[in-house]
Image (cartoon, rainbow, N blue to C red):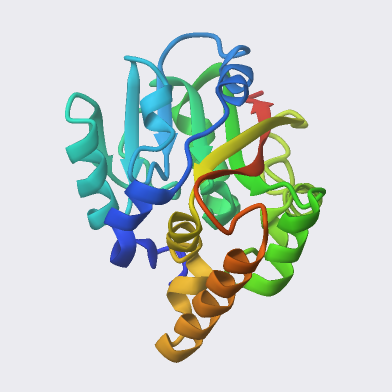
Length: 249
């Protein structure tokens, strides 16, 4: 697990408050091929995806601060500390493993066999990512102004396609079939202040030295104050939930 992957705990409460949920259609698509109802949310964070996965869900998260937020928000969900590389579940115990904005952090050479171990025969591994729609003019400009620490190459649909082109079959070709991919329209109701708060929870932003982080957030704030789409009141940030799913062989 990289230092960036473990950076979110410092902003766990802000993450819980400001990160978006996932398009319902994407969640349904990820699960509709699963052979049963038992679901693992792997790298569950504060439970943004967990909340949409039904009653028979187990959440596993390595960061104790993020896990604490999940347990406070979803006290009835079984939530365990663990990682994709060391899942605290027995063999064949779930029918689907889902991961929201987290699979890119996994060491798939280790996590692939471990995920396959806990999946039932024919079980589904699915990853979901929320990305901004840079086909919308002001969003593309926001990405340019924000810089890669706030909106990185993977945070747009085309960047996501490139970044996930080899997941998960490249590291586990004998364990998973070739993945299917789909993209679902989504959006998040924001104000300028809450969008700045959302971008401040990105791993790249959390890793920046404080003077650089403050300067980047100031640039974003100034941009939003000048754009007619975002200068006052609430607006919808155009997004997509991008998803891939692969069946365990």
